[in-house]
Image 1 (tube, rainbow, N blue to C red):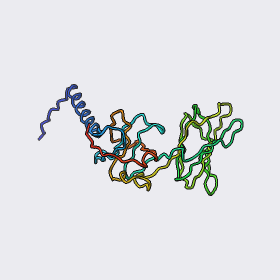
Image 2 (cartoon, rainbow, N blue to C red):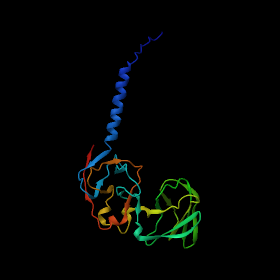
Image 3 (cartoon, rainbow, N blue to C red):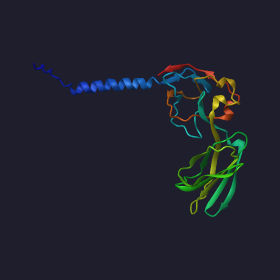
Image 4 (cartoon, one colour):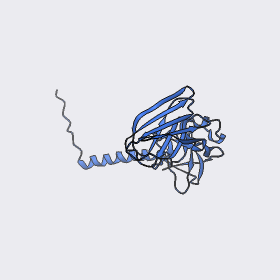
Length: 244
């Protein structure tokens, strides 16, 4: 016996568009629900609880750069700690036609990152980097081409007490270093120098710059960073999160 065929009615185009609109709206609401407005919008250090549905909670700051950024870190997670150049020195180590070398030294804590800003775009200029350790010099970069006027060098060596950065400028204008800073990666909440108010688990600590509304979102891909000196005598204020 042949089974009767059930007629299939195609959905009108407008129905498909309507269903797609409902789906996009639902996805948009879900994504928007992962952003929050803190209850306290005054300047200073804050502590926000990290919701279960937003483990990567951060201050949404699209204008962030290594020099201008909102300081923040999540408890029990690594972040970049900038030590500041007041803990070290920069000097002109070598200069002859076509090449100039700067020497950077940092005293005190271990460092792993050197951020450098120069006056003009390097435009593919070759750069050498050598780290000096108690065991001797270790090349990190050899004639690596660098563009832009801002770059960072990072290493995993221990005991580095100085880093030499050489620029092969040849017929170009001599590179001039206008700013630099040294840093390291660590679990900030485990640092011995950190005040006790910054050690509550499942918390986002951030410095509200004041003068604007800060929004917190689940953006786990953002790199978090703080300045060591700004934490030393600070006390964070707790905030409540209001879903957007």
